[in-house]
Image 1 (cartoon, rainbow, N blue to C red):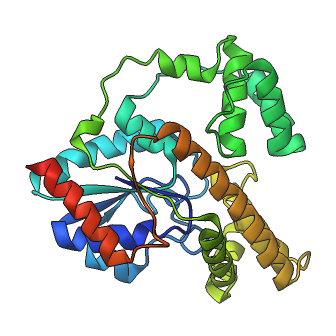
Image 2 (cartoon, rainbow, N blue to C red; image 1 turned 30 degrees about the vertical axis):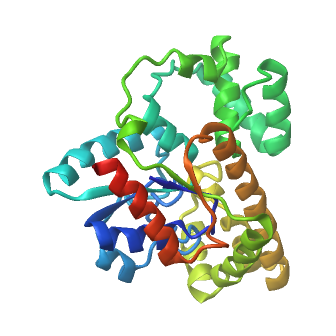
Length: 305
């Protein structure tokens, strides 16, 4: 398993590794599941997908809400298929909850009262991340830890408002066995220094606001979808949309996209430090792609002995 913040080089490392160990790359990023978002989410290219099999990428349209539970169900289904082929699954992504579900089981959460859901989502739409985070902190001081976006913060607020029990308490009561015990995996987190990562994030922002990126966002916005859908809240959609509708200059769009992505990467890093403290750390800024691949191969060889 290869986790890490956005733009840290996860996909390139996974591809190099997969070619060496007969691997299959499995998406563990909640935005890369959407078919409509290839450029905006930096999904692997067609050429890369032809080099080795890539699974769970671009599998659902933007008008669907794709939950962690649904991702886990699909991941379980494909694990048997991959094993039967004698291949090695390599889970790659930046969504900590996906890895947590895979390694720790998944809580069967209660139904949320529709009125509570509507009220919380209206509150989130008006107040944004900071307001929801503050409201959640007042109800559940531990509830915001590791939650990195508005959707998941709002979900946690809905649960505690509707049931009187915090989301993390429901999750702690999960007694299902893990799909993959961590002892059966080689868990890797890419942990680059902040300046190196910020430079790559800015470079990616410039690449995203090209003709293909603008065309992708224009096609998505033309669908007239609910702005609260996860795909519509992907980083890049609002910023490139502002450029398309003349609200932002190209320089302003790049700046806002860079800032939003840096903030997201920081939240991801917080999650990885808190939730994945026992994972192997690799620094892509110090070591080359090939040397990091070899380090993983060493862990892999020890694990399979």
